[in-house]
Length: 304
Image (cartoon, rainbow, N blue to C red; front, side):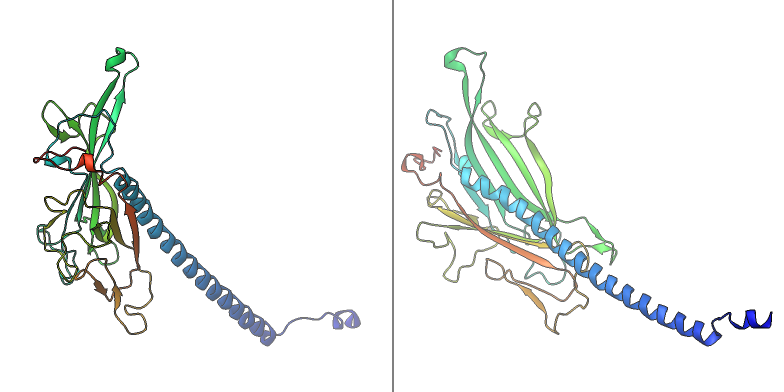
C-alpha cells in the first residue's frame, strides 16, 4: 500500500502561487492589448462617423449649388430680387467669440446660403396645353446654437446645428413658402449637429472672391453677391467643420500645442485645447446654371 501512494504526484503551494501569478500576468497582457485595440477601433469609427456626416451634408449643398439658376426654356414666371440664384449672408463664426457661443446670432454664427432654381409640375390628365406648370424652389441653409448637452461636461456644447428649408414659389402670394399641401416642402429641418462652422465663399470667373475686401475678409451680415453682381458667381467654395460627439484625444493638448483649425475665411480660425476631434471638409461647387446673359437682372427684375 505504501508503495502505491508514493507514486502519486501533486502540487505544492508555491507551485500553485507561481501558476496564479503567471496566469494573472497573461490576463493583464490580454486585457491591455484588448483595450488598445478597442480604443484604436473607437477612434477610427468616430473619425469615420463625423467625416461621413459632414460629407453627406456637403454633398447635398454641392448638388443644390449646381442647380442654382436653372430654369426651363418656357418658364416665364415674373420674379423679383427674391429669385436671385445664389445669396450668401456672411457671419463671423465663433473663431473671434472666445470660449462661448453667443446666443445673439446677428453677431456670430455660420454663413447662410439661399439657392433658387426652376422646376416643372406635370399633370397628364390636364389639357395638352396646360399639362406643364412652371415653378421655382428656394433652398436655405443656416445655423443656430446647438441645444445638445455634452454628457462629459453637463454643459451645452460649443457649436451649432445646421437647419434647412425647402420652399416653393406661391404665385397667389408672390412669395416662397412651405405649402402644407406638399410633403416635400418644409420651413425648418435639422440636418446636422455638432457643427463648429459653415462657410460659403462666392468666386467669379477669375477665381476672385466677390465683394471681399483687399485682405479677403467680409463684414458681419454682409450679403453677397451685391446688387449688380448676382450673376457673376461661377463657383462657391464650401467649408464645413464638424466636431466629434465624445472625446477623441487622451490629452487636452496634443504634443503640448493648441490645436488650430484653419477656416476658408480670414478671422474664423478655431483654436482649441479640448479632447474633441474636428474634421474640416472643403469642396468647390460649380454654379453651372448661373451667368447666362438672358437671365441677368434687368430693371430690378430677376429673370432666372
